Image (cartoon, rainbow, N blue to C red; front, side):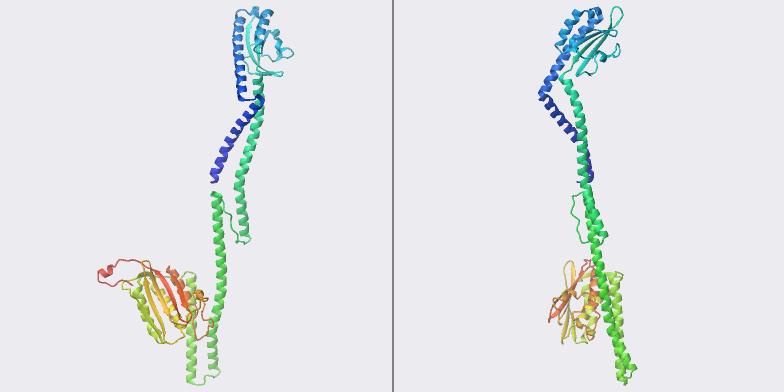
Amino acid sequence: MSIKVRLLLSYIAMLIVPVVLTIVVALILTVTNVGSIRNLTHLGETEQNLLQEGAKIFTDIKVTADQNPEQLKSSAYLAKLDQKLSIINTGIIVRQDNDVIYASKLFNGEDIVEHLPRFGHHHEETHDPEFIGNHLYLIKQHDFHFKNKQAGSIFLLTNVGPIGQFAHKLIIMMGFAVILIIICTNGILTYTVSRSIIKPLRSLKKAAEQIKEGNLSFAMEPYRKDEIGELAAAFEEMRLRLKASVEQQLQYENNRKELISSISHDLKTPITAIKGYVEGIMDGVADSSEKRERYMKTIYTKANDLDKLIEQLFLFSKLDVKKLPFNFENIDMNRYVADCTEEMQFDIERSGITLTYHTDIEEPLIVIADRENLKRVMTNIVENAVKYMKRENGTIDVYITANQEMVTIKVQDNGQGISGDRLPFIFDIFYRADVSRNSATGGSGLGLAIAKRIIEEHGGRIWAESIEGKGTNILFTLKRVQVEKRGEENGENPHY
């Protein structure tokens, strides 16, 4: 539930809950003081009947006051009227000017006269109920004039009784109850809603403090699906990415140190050799033209090795930072691999190793690739197989297979093979499965690492399979592209 909906529901609850609780409290107070709702209804009906009866008598008195006002000075008439009114819990007061000439016995002991309205003070005959002493009276007033033009007023005061007292008491109690209900309801709802918001915010604050202190090895607790939950999920995603970035940075740092160490080793070996041969020439060790020529050829070979190592380091560094440009185009891998194999056969066969290309596929196998960099991949894989062959009558076989989505190239040799514990690392920079790293074997340890980066830039995959003592297979895949054979329809060769 979103925070917006939660706040809206809390506002609605702040309106509805106090109303419901007020009704419940009113019912409880009514039952407590009256006994039941039915009793209250009965009392109300009784009071209503008495008020109606009093209204009829008051109408008759008004007629008498208007037509025969002097009769209201008659004690006998007023006593008879008072007796009739006492049945309905009502008393009568007659006032002439400011003097009371008659007051019912109902008011004995109560100072009522001071509470009576003045002559002509109210236009309405019935006044609001008023507490006089300990009783609540409903006052009816009728003003008239006696024959001597003196102002006269007649009052009927009905003791409202239990209903009025209960209503007054209920109003006071309900006032306090409503205030208490509003305070409690708003307080509880505000606390509940604020707690549901503040608690996850505190967790986010603690998480931010941990990140500030450099601790990324923690996990955010899952929250419900609201805005704060989305924030927590985004925060957790940020933490994971930041942790991965830091770990990657540490890995880069370790790789950099390892790279420097490997470069130092691989540069030191040929430089030491060059230095030794130069010193031999300078010291006169090479005392014949044949020996000097052999020394110079060795120096030249080592210099070429250095140049090749530097070139491969430069290439790998550009691949590592993704700054090596690629010229992608449609290539028919069937013909392309055949041509690459044919170009390498002459040099490979001089080493006593047979290089053969095998394919049963006649149709073009079109991929999108960079021609020069893909050739570097093929060259590095084949040269790596040649370096670690170490047997007579060595063979390197190149196979190509395809399905509707991928083209797979496999370079298979019958060399010494690679042990299972070393196989996963052969594509790492400067890694050599031959741990001796002797100068006779040669190589920079960058060939397969470069091949892997190039294939990955093509969106492909490269891996190795090997059985120690029997040989190694290097395989890589490229995405196949389905193209129309418009060139064949026109009698032209497809582009490759």
